[in-house]
Image (cartoon, rainbow, N blue to C red):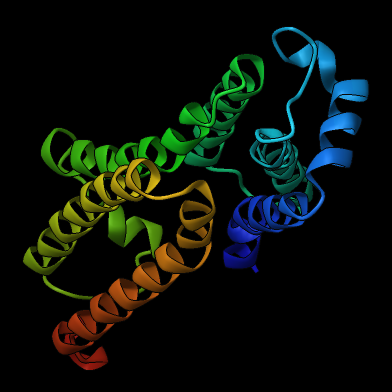
Length: 210
């Protein structure tokens, strides 16, 4: 359930952008009429309308994600609050300056924040952050957690760089599609590989209890 909630803002961004691509003129008119106060000059152009609408939707989607989790009495970790702050700031700048550059930086900043959090936990706080995230239910040697932590740090760093490469070397439509399907596929494959690596080093129940 949490995985689906985490995907909600990304899914809403993708759907709203794709829909607006086919309805640029009415979307531009609607945003100018109702959200003109959020953009410099008060007018949303036809060309920029899809990404500005998607940016607005992703801000609302992230807020909705937190509201749903609150209503379900779920714990909201600091990373989600940080992600909300990033998307509000960059989404607001995207709207005001009519520039998709800001929102394109959002995934990279979030990836690097997650990688940075793991790095700080490993290097400065000497904590097995990954083990704690999994509820301490998986018993593997400390060295394995250390390798996995560095693997995730490297992965998040690479994902941030890859996002910027796609964002600024291909069309916005290609970037939006990659953001939805490409990053999801890479995350699933990497998580699967991590799971396989963990399974090779899991200690037998009898051994872990001895």
